[in-house]
Length: 148
Ligand code: RB5
Image (cartoon, rainbow, N blue to C red; front, side, top):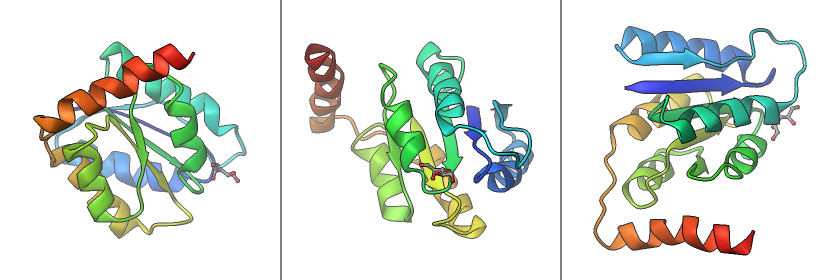
């Protein structure tokens, strides 16, 4: 799968680990930074990953900051992006199955690398259930564009 990944300084080390694992698992990973633990602004990286997903350049996005919160807030401003901040497996699975989330945000200060790897695996493997959830997901986009 084509996956875009990004992090701020707080998520840098975990991003490096996850990128290596994803590449080893055969995914086509586009690393959009940051490239060091030097302090940066998370919205810059959230927007880069969200735009890669919006354009179709990536099928899914993964974002890591300290909490996952700022990354998800920012990514969700990009039309067509549905970002879910998850710290346990049930939410990561349901974000795909019911919400058709296309970006997973995580907090490196919230989850350890083992949980993060499980969240990523579930997020990439779980299909959208469609059916009754289809119209609800469609409403996210149509209602939010009306509110603008
Ligand atoms: C950086 O200290 C921290 O604020 C950032 O990584 C993130 O948690 C924001 O949501």
